[in-house]
Image 1 (spheres, helix red, strand yellow):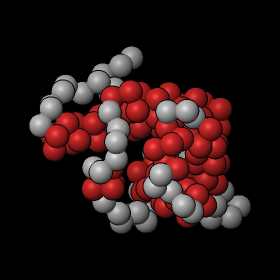
Image 2 (cartoon, rainbow, N blue to C red):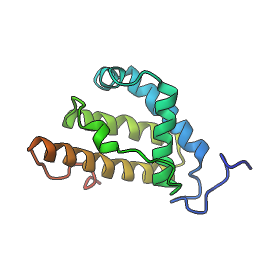
Image 3 (tube, one colour):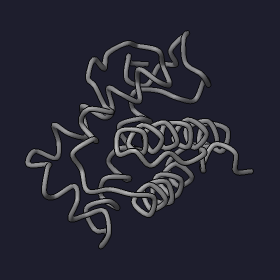
Length: 142
């Protein structure tokens, strides 16, 4: 087993590995690039897709494997984007679909739960900055 495929002692689930995260990012961003709503938003900002996918894989590694590899400011990166509730809904739909295709069921459920919480946090943060606060919409779903 390599470090890419070996389970981390800090993983939130034993089936979540660096390799799984990389596969999830590849699948998810392939869907994003092809999506008529999200594709243009990402295309306007992302010039180097492999670099972006690796950076977001670092983010998810920090979240799911507790590696602390990601050191960015994700909220600040999203503040200037022309996004609203429908973008978060579509992002989540594609992420959930990708997670269910790529991950074992228990790991997919954990990724989806974290993604919903992150979406709520970002949506609330953007709403706060824009002066239009809403109640969380995603984490409370069943």
